[in-house]
Length: 129
Image (cartoon, rainbow, N blue to C red):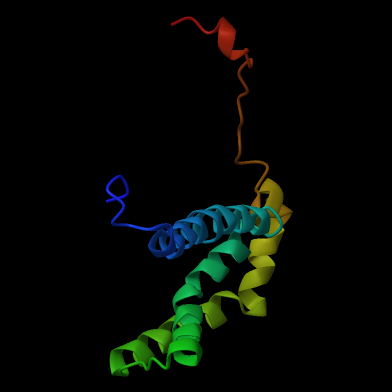
């Protein structure tokens, strides 16, 4: 071990580098980058990006590692790509964009059949337990 001198600094340097890389880049930076990106797109767009993650993983594995997909992988990629295409088509995105920010299209609301009762909003501290 370290105390007996059998493990030298030269053998520990790659391990220390790996620990720093894992902690700083693959954990801390990716969480920061994900939060940064999510704050700048809608929830729908973020979900579509996350849905495409297996496709990106397969592409990176193919180009960087020479990995290949079997027939089940190709079928899955086709299904994911098709689902992304259907969900992100112009016909579907118009409805999604009109609902952002809790805005309900006026044609979807029948004002005669909706009755809303509002209660007084009290601060949390005043609520008895």
